[in-house]
Image 1 (cartoon, helix red, strand yellow):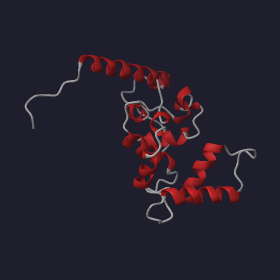
Image 2: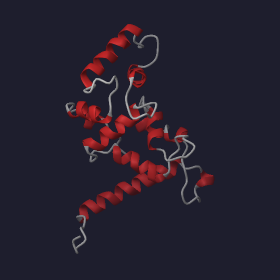
Image 3: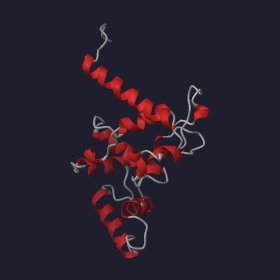
Image 4: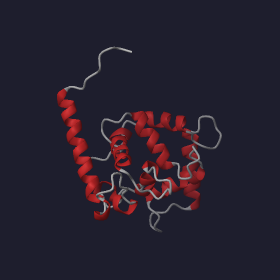
Length: 182
């Protein structure tokens, strides 16, 4: 609409270039030697999960699945997928972007809502699924009831993206805890 192109300040452009080159280097290190000549290689989820930034994350497999564009749904990532992942988890990503991806990661059955099954898997990921850390069925039921009581504004028994974003907006620590730094 305007006749002038918007330009990035040189220092910001330089910062983006450095970040992009660092991301490409990290991605290339994960690409199998035999795939390095492929113009658009995919890195298998098993290799992505070796990144120190994801290794301890209880949602690491879900993260790969959410950001993967693989038709086979194997969680493998292209460089563009990898950049999307890094962008969503970066300090500069907005609350809206972070909450959108967090919601998708927590929506284990990919049906667009967080239902009791999703919430149970979410709690189990956070607490661990060992006998020492697993909640009793009664504790789990009570916790999920509390989550739904607090979050399910329309009282349909699920949490949709809008409800999730409403809850997240009241959590100042969410943005700072939802990040991956190269």
